[in-house]
Length: 153
Image (spheres, rainbow, N blue to C red):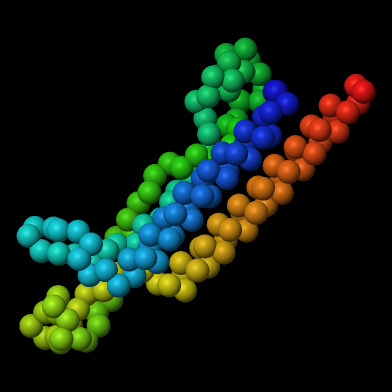
């Protein structure tokens, strides 16, 4: 384990949380988008997207440790990576009565995206807090490394 291991772990978390905040921003930006994707010749509203994380594995150092018979074979502690960005297909679209809307059906209802702004704000606050915590860890590690360099003076 190198002295930069904890910095790399925090950096991977910062990258993952930043992508999560970007996806949440995209969801909030498209909360009123009724023409998100063309499916079978018809427009469908924007679908909410979410980010899934997984521990980093498959790195050379973890494979080397596993090949050498190390007891520390788990992927935990090597950081996090985004496994996928998926669309929310379980939550139905909202129906809003607006007969003047160009995408209204014959009854006057418009399908709106399945994005809940309150839920997005809670996810954004969670991502922000996680990002801030990782910045704090990164700064603490940097301060410890700087103090370690001063030992030799």
